[in-house]
Image (cartoon, rainbow, N blue to C red):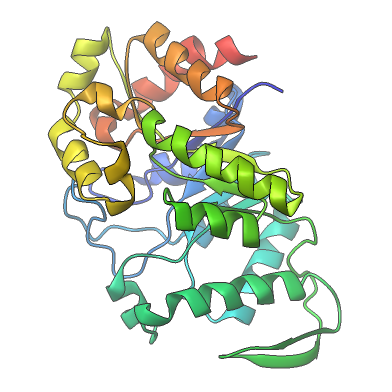
Length: 320
């Protein structure tokens, strides 16, 4: 099966517009993209260190609903975090999947923003327990007369119609050994986000070992930053490479794979160059067994529409 392509929509940040979030779906579908993805947050201020400060953030469920109702694209999250009451979340997912005719993939994870938990009336210290209950309720309410006895919510004989589909695809988001273990234990796949080849290869070995022991076949998705230009030098000049390197060095789980000193150390997480360069690096992801690549253009918002058109015309056809 050929590599499938999605796009992380700019529903956040200072360069987000109505057209880029709600109006772009039909064009993406025509260009050959198969999916769009959304982040999850409360009290957004800019996220990672290399992003510009901003409070603009469109709720992922509003964005997914808009795209699902106007296109045949798959909609998904990267990363859905346990900041919602779990039965309310299950009902949202059931309704969204019904609208999208099953075209929903959820990247899920613990969440790493203390303010989001505080604003939801929760504590980030409880996020592992909250995450596990979120998954348990989501799975239980896929069936009628569901029951659940958990730390924060209890119910019996609960039927949500429509509820979450029984075959809802969940992928665990994170690029650490703990994330790989949770992917195997709780979900159907691994979704490491931005992940350099040197980190990916080490963790992929752990994923394969864990999946074999559990008797599971895991799918893999990834979200590289992309800068498409005339050549690699021009593409890198338009990206905050120093900021991305700094973020990489701050990740404790990546320290065994360092040092991160140049753009070449980010290969796999930052794909930059002309169309041929981008195709070549994406083929390396395909050879590593990646099923879905969600392209992230947040570093090239000044050329967002141009980049989307060039990707559809010059990059995606190489994988059909």
